[in-house]
Amino acid sequence: MTEVDREIVEAIRAGDTQAFEELYKAQFRRVFNFSIRKLGDAAEAEDVTQEVFAAVFTCIDRFEGKSDLVVWIYGIARNILNNRLRRRGSMRLIPLDDVPPEASPVDLGPEPRAEARETLGRVQEAIEQLPRNQRRILELRHGRRLAIRKIAEIMNRSEDAIKSSLYRARRTLMSSLPEQGLEL
Image: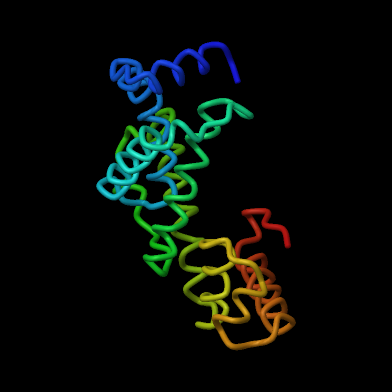
């Protein structure tokens, strides 16, 4: 833990609300951007960000200083986001046009954005062409980052069947999108 982190933590623990406000201002945008990338919804990302900082404030006594303060905050954010996504039950894809500008770390200009939009459209079309069970397995594995074992439980299939379906889905995507350079 850095000396600056130590000072901030000690001040917040001592009840210094100004120190907490400074931490909030310094880290809000980063936590918000992290949340919006995971959730795809600015309003929900703002709710999560508020929840993260409420947890930081109430749990600051549990911060042991084994890592940087920002790493600890991201850990809280990750846990809250994972819980939210688990409750939500599925991944939502949103159009790039719906992502607010502040969620993008840099403005790349219209050409790269148009290319990214076009690529995303091709990938979405290719995914939609997959059989329903393969789409679901891809969503669970890559969207929700579930283990093969958990996916097998959810889908009431063997782990080998899930691995096989996942392999076929990836292979189909690779052949549908050769210009993307996808790898198994």
